[in-house]
Length: 116
Length: 113
Image (cartoon, rainbow over all chains, first blue to last red):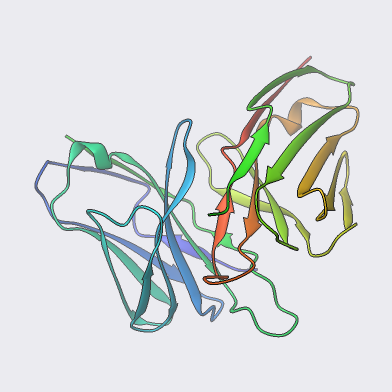
């Protein structure tokens, strides 16, 4: 089974703090994603990465950055946390689209971040 | 820009009844995914639909895809309480950044005894 783990289930930070959310997958997937989930808005893509050191902006990248130094690990960074970044953050991974593959994404358990 | 609309967003149904959740999307795509999310938990993959006319069934849930109509349905047969959850459809972008999935806002299903 694919396993995607996230470093924390719950996190409380103060406004202005630098926050690191980490995601690790054990299935050698090349694609990794960070989403935020808010009530009434569904899942929105923040950033994704299709290879080590490669990243691409999603739909709502402002206020976030990412790092992918190793294939299995994808970090989301909030440079200066703000209250409007209070949300559930979900990491996912998938195989690359080649030939007969498809983009089924496997999700981690989520990190509920509260910024005070 | 790909847009994905689910309806209804809230669905309260009695055990034993049937109902359908609809997922419409705005641009051409051949691939659609259904996920389930239990309260406080993450998303779990339910169905992968890869072509026009695809139909998948698991227990009381059946999903289908009509790419010409840009429509997928998730049909619930004889609902039971255990099916209470939020259901998301997600559509694969067919061009450009085709790594991406665009999600609907989700349908919160509550099955009452």
